[in-house]
Image 1 (spheres, rainbow, N blue to C red):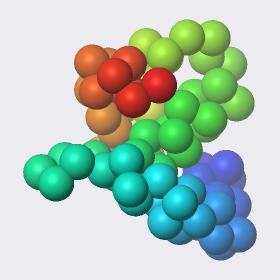
Image 2: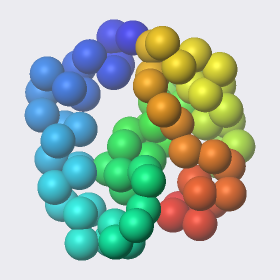
Image 3: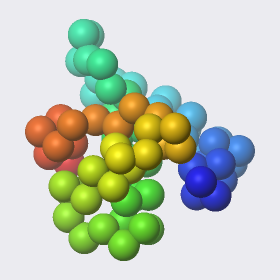
Length: 76
């Protein structure tokens, strides 16, 4: 939770979303900046591959909606 709050308070999450907004497809459900933040947090929690973002998906009350493994793999 600390990493998520730090990213929000520091403006990192909003900055990533703004910078990566040109990559967002017109009908996309997930924000590319949020996907990158989720990947970074999963690595900080000890993950070592893209599929480890599932760790965050198991805690929606803490991390919110997390993109599926196919969506994350396509963006990375």
